[in-house]
Image (cartoon, rainbow, N blue to C red; front, side, top):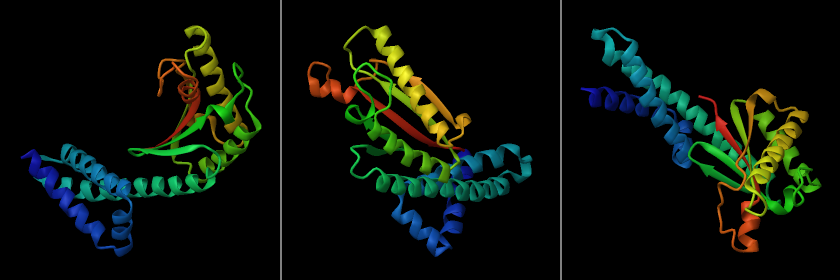
Length: 218
């Protein structure tokens, strides 16, 4: 029974969205928007079914799916737009822009962020952060996580403190440029989350990084 409640609303939501040519084209061009529609439809169906009376659950699930699908599609489309804008802004900066599910992740490499052992922001990093701050203000319906990472040179405790100091420094810089501090979370991971081997200089450079993750509000 539950599978029917979920399947029917998703079909109705898809048909409702498909009735608009521009929305349908957006979904075809942007798989993340399509994913948002599907997730929103399922969530709306479950909520609608749960809160409705026993004899109205199917109808409520259909309505919930349509509303949830539309909301999910809007969130996905908004994140697609922000991703495109950030890719343009970060061009030729050595900053990687990645899409991880619904989230957008900006990876700032060691050579533009901080000097060795320092939490003072380099001028090149300031320039990139100015563009990020502008984008975050243009798309305010998101939560921001700022994470600092180090290599394994030095003690784990000192690397942990350094990664935290750097994350908080980036948060404060973005706040000074108009991004609401309530939207941001700063965290340091020290040397605990390497993305490459610490056995060579290139790997250690990859591990010394700052990541800013843009997370859509639900």
